[in-house]
Structures are given as C-alpha cells and as structure tokens.
View 1 (cartoon, rainbow, N blue to C red):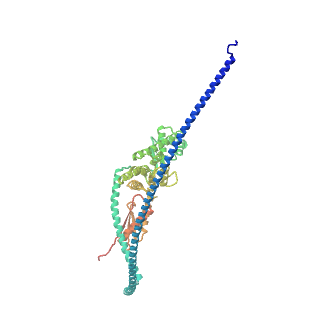
View 2 (spheres, rainbow, N blue to C red; view 1 turned 45 degrees about the vertical axis):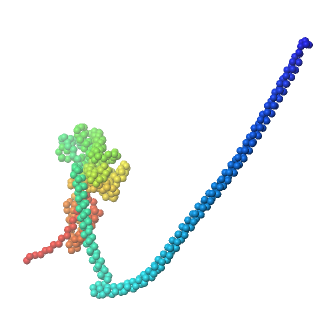
View 3 (cartoon, rainbow, N blue to C red; view 1 turned 30 degrees about the vertical axis):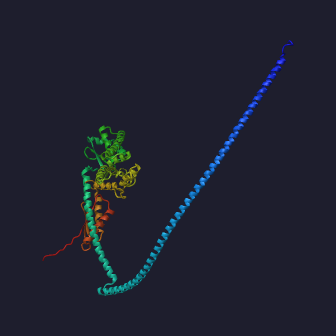
Length: 525
C-alpha cells in the first residue's frame, strides 16, 4: 500500500466513529422523544385530574340536593301517615263510643226484662202452687168417684181395665182384619191385573213344545234274525255293548225291536246310535262294536255342542263361554218331572225376555240369565251339590256377570233377588214349570204334597176339616163357625198361606180357600 493513500485501518476507524455518532444521535433523539411524550402525558394527566375533581364536586352537590329532597319527601310522608293515623284513631274512638252507648242501652233493656221475668216467675210460682192444690183436690174427687163407681159396678179398677183392654183388642182385631182384607183386595186387584197382562203377553208370544221322555229307548230291527246276531256267540256281543255303553239291552218277545234301558240318557243315546250303525253295517263282533261305540260318542259330543249352539241362536244370546254352551247341549238329555231341561231353559229365556220387555228391563240380560238358570242340572249327577249351587259355581268359573249369577242363585228362593232380572227369571221359571202339561209328578210325590197341605191346614185352631183339591193347587178349609168369626177368617187364611210357603216346595201357586158356614136343622112334624 502506498503512503499517500488512506489505509484500511483509517477507514475502519472512520466508519466506527460514524457509527458511534449515528448511535449517539439516535439515543439523543429517542431521549428527546421520551421527554416530550412524558411532558405530554403529564399535561393530559393534569387535565384529567381537574376533570375528575370537577365531576366529584358536581356529584357531591347533586347528592346533597337529592338528600335534601328525600328528607323533605320523608317528612311529608311521615306527616301524612301521622295525620291518617290520627284520623283513624278519632273514627275508632267515635265507633267505640257508639258501641258503648248501644251496650249500655242493651244492659238497661236486659235489666228491665230480668225484672219483668222475676216478677212473672213469682206469679207463675204462686199459680203452680195453686194448681198443685187444685190437682190434689181433683185427685181426691177422682178417687172418691172411682170408689163410688167400683161400688156401683161391682168391679175393681183392674177388672175394669182388663174388660176395657179386651174390648179394645176385639175392636182392633176387627179393624185390622177389615184393613188387611181391604188392602189385600186392592193389592190383588192391581197385582192380578198387571200380572195377568204380563203373563198372558209373555205366554201368548212363547209357543214351546213339550216332549215326555222315559228311561228306555227302542231300536227297531229289520228282522228277528238280527236279535241272535246282536246277542252273539255265548252272548259276547251283547256283553261287549253293555260294558262299553253302561246300558242294559233287553231282548225279549217284542217283535223286531230291542229295548235300551238306562238312567243316563247320554249313554242311552250313544248305545242307540252305535246299535243302529251296527245293524246297518251288518258286521257285529266285539272289535266292530268298540269302533261303532267310539264313533257314536263323537257323534253325541258333536250333537251336544250343536244343540247348545242352536239354543243360543234360538234365544239370541251371544258371547257365552264354549264350555257353558256344551253344558247347555247336555241338558237336551236331561228331564225334570218329565220336562226336558233344555226346552225348559229355552222357554224360561223367552218368557224372561218378554217379561223384561214389558217391565222395561234389559231384555238380552234377562234372556241370558233365563237360559243359564238351570245350567247346574247338566252336571248335578256328576258332582256333589244342588243344581243351584253348581250353576252358580259354573257361572262364576266362566266369568258371567254378577246379575246373572244372582239370578241363577235366587231362581228357587235360596237367596234374596238383588235385581229386577232375578225376579223376572224366578217368575219365568215358575210359569214354565206350572203351565198345564209341562211337568208330571210321581204318584208318591203327589199324594205326599196333598197330605202335607191338609196336615198344615188342620194344625190351626178352629179348623174343622180341610181338603186339597184341583191337583193340589187349592186347599179348601172348613172352620168351626162358633170359634172363628168373619174377621178371624182373613187372618187364618193368611197364616195358612204363610206356613205353606215356608214348609212346602211346589210349582206355581196354591189357593187357600177358607169357608165358614152356619147350618140350622129343624124337622116338621
């Protein structure tokens, strides 16, 4: 490097110096800017403090003003409340003064009334004393008169009282009998009129068939040779048929016929159908007999269900449990006093519906209860208990309504009927059983009932003799005229009827006819 030229070191130094100067200048500029900013902020802060002091002063002045206003308002309100309280206090004092005046007036009035009552009590006490004295005098006079009457009549007071009571008792008995007779007449007139109207309307609309059934069935044979084939070798065929069906076969001298005898009509029907099939088939041997008996059982079961459904359809009752329908069909093979149980139930259902229509009751419910009222008869020989209780149990088991159950339970009077439906079924059952030709009784039952009627009637005092007439539907009672008068006849007839109702069971009604007559006999000489 030449000596005249600027060396690199010098250039570096100059550059460093320039850089230092630039930095120093920058620092000085920054410091001046900060100082300026600080002065500016101080000026702003001073202005803000002045504004804050001014705002605070204004707020204090406003608060002072509000405070004074609030105090003034509170004083005004206090003054108003004080004035209001004083006014109310004055009004209350005035009201109290008015009440005091009224109370004082009432007290004066009560004092006057008490004085008047005391005076009246004193007067009444004196009058009571006078009355007691007069009463004693009257009693003395009455006793003296009573003694005089006893002397005159020759009777003591007890004897006179007994005579008077006896006379009054006879008068009351006479009036009671007359009243009972009149009331019964009126009730019978009205009841007979209505009952005849209802029953005639029901019966004339219900035409029911009657079929008498016996304990035997007759099966016709095509020829006499068939009897030997039915008996079989050493009687094996007839023994097989009897053991399978439980029915006795009677093969006698009856031409071209076999008699089936048995108490169970269902078994008898099974035996009849099986025997007819065997006769038509011609092949009669134990194996074929078993096959035909099984077929006959199925046919009878189908027939039972069809009979139950037909009865439901005929009556117009629906929604009955299928087991009850089957039991209804079984009643086709049951009889009561010669009356078919299923026909009787259908008839009772029709009559119940007609009576319900006349009386404004539920016709469908009456028909349902009438149809099921004897349902217990379909199982009463298979289970223990009366047909009424069995019918109630069956209806409860298969969810029949409470009205139907009560009608079944009450149709023979075992319990009190709880509805119009129960009364209707009871009446319909009696109508169906009591109509002419509906039932037949054994001679023993018939004679026992007649004897019981006469024994009941003869058991009353004053009865001379009695006669059960008209097949037991009337009892004629002849009384001793010297012991029973006309008034006592009414009471006697009523008592006899009541005892018959309590002790006997019978269809329909029994007429009690009391006869009192006087006979005078003389001879022309």
